[in-house]
Length: 97
Image 1 (cartoon, one colour):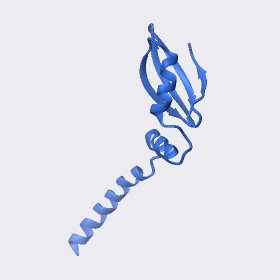
Image 2 (spheres, one colour):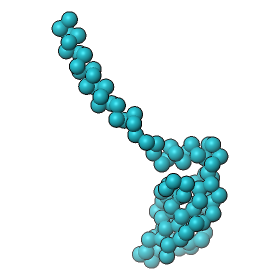
Image 3 (cartoon, one colour):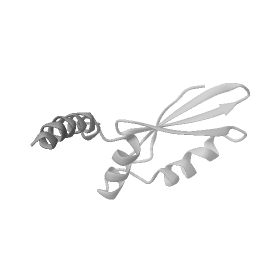
Image 4 (tube, one colour):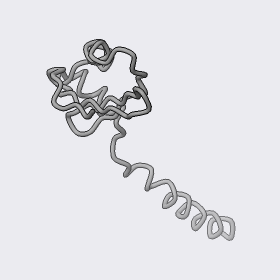
């Protein structure tokens, strides 16, 4: 009985510590994968192949997913260039220069 009284509080504390991990929102990669599988967005490599030729000589630094928009980051001549692309259609929405 004494062992039970010791282990029960420890089990409850361990359960409370692990609970916040279950409440985390889906990460960008998980959300992007789910939307692509469900047919709501284009695959990122296909979008990258469309956009990269628009910026010759620029270094591609990577993507971000903001809602239903991919934001691709480039560097050219010491300047950062952002290209916002609709994830569903692959259409360029905006480009910062």
